[in-house]
Length: 257
Image 1 (cartoon, helix red, strand yellow):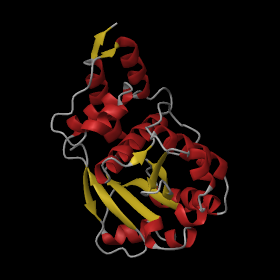
Image 2 (cartoon, rainbow, N blue to C red):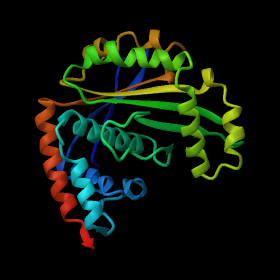
Image 3 (cartoon, rainbow, N blue to C red):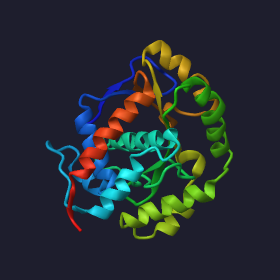
């Protein structure tokens, strides 16, 4: 697996996992496959040993290399790769779940990710909003950026954007009446959050400090609050090394003009 997930032990106000990367090579391979536009392929075979890409074009590889390069702002490149890691972690935790594909541009202005649950009557029962942050200052990022954004969502800000994305997602999944399903959503009941962030450690104590205030920004049952930590030292160098391996993987994929 490109990412291993270890559930938090003692936190009561949120649920979550610590991520670790057992093989940079395997993770780089998955990221490269997604970067050439084959995320759906990855979702289908992620749990199968020997993750292999389908043939692709030189143009697709060129675009992938652009995604995997800093292009003047290394934080944007790292942010994109971390969003892909978050998507992979979500796929591993909930195989077959209904979620959107990773964005294919840096610094996308919108939701980092979205996951929707539907019951047997085609009723939308949960809408999980992803927030992914690759940062060297995790606590200040959470306190000053993420919690305010979550509070805005709780007040109904940008609900039109979420509505549009949910409609598109369930339509693509073959829902018989996506417009009506979205119209019937009780947002205060179904809205949930998933924050994924980098930190140098992920212990019971560091998690409590990092996610302090989550239940105040997002009140209600613990199922509404998910938290994920990627434990990494020297974030920028680690991401840069990962990108270099992923670029090599992408370059090996070009088999057609």
